Length: 207
Image 1 (cartoon, rainbow, N blue to C red):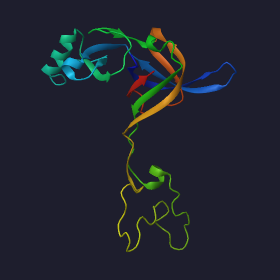
Image 2: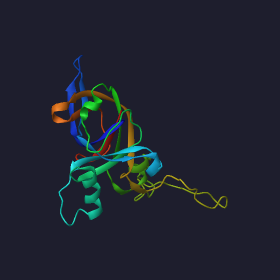
Image 3: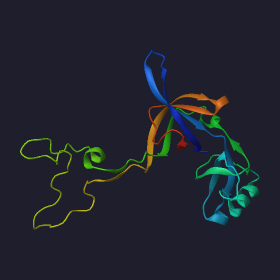
């Protein structure tokens, strides 16, 4: 199994062997349950679907199709699902995979959704310097982008021009993060550095 679903708990710091204070992120990884097995004959590709976090079953938050899906796998309804296409061993419905999967992993890749910051200007979104000067009548242009187009040619603004717009709320992958510690009794994974998303958000941790 290349990875598992997890929940970002928050950031802290640990001391390394040489006494340095290392910032790190604590992630609750698993336990994940196999809820579906995709096959080439039936689905056209091979993958394993994992479920994470039990879901409270009420008439308002669970459909009959969802309940039937989990009932077929013989597991309780899960709140989050994800598919993994590369796996090195055989799994069957209902198998539980824990954080022990990363016991021998030194580096991992983490996929998460970045914090949404709404509509932002070019200074915050792209790091523009602004017009800088506050003299010569520049009373309202300190954080403006400046000129974005040309004259009669090409007489338009090219696609992809860095301008103001919605910032964040996108899928972000951070690669080659060092695993500092695995705490199997609490399903915790301590990863060096920061991860995308807010505390409590769902992330996918890949080996």
